[in-house]
Length: 474
Image (cartoon, rainbow, N blue to C red; front, side, top):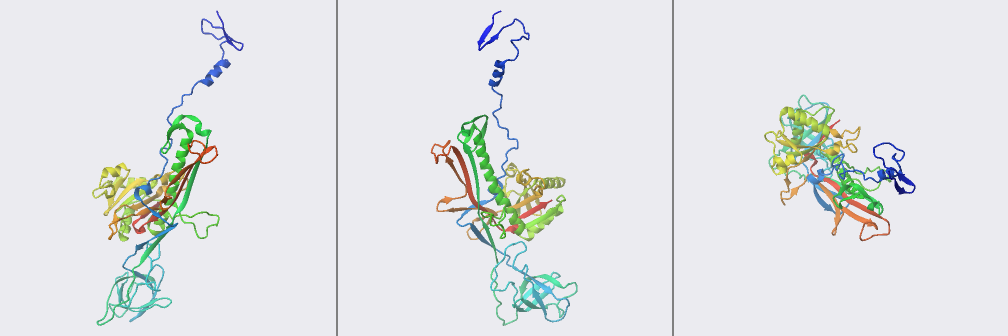
């Protein structure tokens, strides 16, 4: 039988049957051939964790407005009706009794979180002739007001000579001003300037970058990756740049949700400025409910509705819930048969139930208040707020979703807003630029790389914190 000479001293002797011979054992040729075989690699890149972006909350429910300073402010009206905190004496008596004014809490609403401005140097709204009601229904007449170092009020009980009846204890009590009464031919009372709440916050600078060498930018991979700004291709740097952009957007969202201003005693090494985020805004100025470690109950929701109603909360709320709280609410409402119950409205979604469902909201009503619930991925992300030891899977944010409009201009008043620096046609809302001498047609320098840069200068702005609600479940 003929032999085959392959050159290089290699000779193969064919045989008529399959049999192991000295010549047909694995040789250098077959090893090289295996190395040259094209691997079977699927061109689809599997997204093991799905869409990892957590942005969307602020973009969905918030407005945007430019600002020309690093600090921005606005004013909000306070209650036009007032209360005053006073100290009751230890013993009752007849005739005029002097009550000592307690400054704490008098010139802030219970949920305001910011000082109000009152006319003059006094910090109370009480005037001669005012009628004050106690918690037990007694009506007290203010005879004189002494605005000394610590203001005092001389009062009489309008129902008798004894200034207070039984059932009162000494110490601090809150009285509400329900009106006034004056004698014939008497002068007018002093005026009360409207109180206002002040709100201020900062914009902060957030940056991100990605770099790839010219060599790596031309290395082809087996599978295709997508980049919403640069298109699809078999280049790994497209994935790196896409991840950088997504991570940058997430950082922007995280700071506007979780951010805090830098404290006055922070180290001088702490650079830049912080912005107060949505959570801090609600927790320090708005309404909140601490559920402890127990599952939420209908009594809890009733307490929420009562509190929202008391402080003029929104009738329609978007509830972004962590997974633990979301499941608790599902269990509660499933037992009640309350999802999309009669009375649920969809004003936020143009009164279209399908739109709410397509966005992943489940809606229910209680006591005339509608809640559109959606599980918020950020609170359960294993590398963010869902990390081991964090309690955020039990958190929930109730954001007002009804429409408030300015009485004069008719313009819509947002519940929250993103502020960004801009002036004279230059905006820092979202900046993106490329540098380097690789890939780019127009080179910017002699460095053999491509650098992608992102930058923004933005901050969170919230309105009427009394209309928000925060759930906290440990």
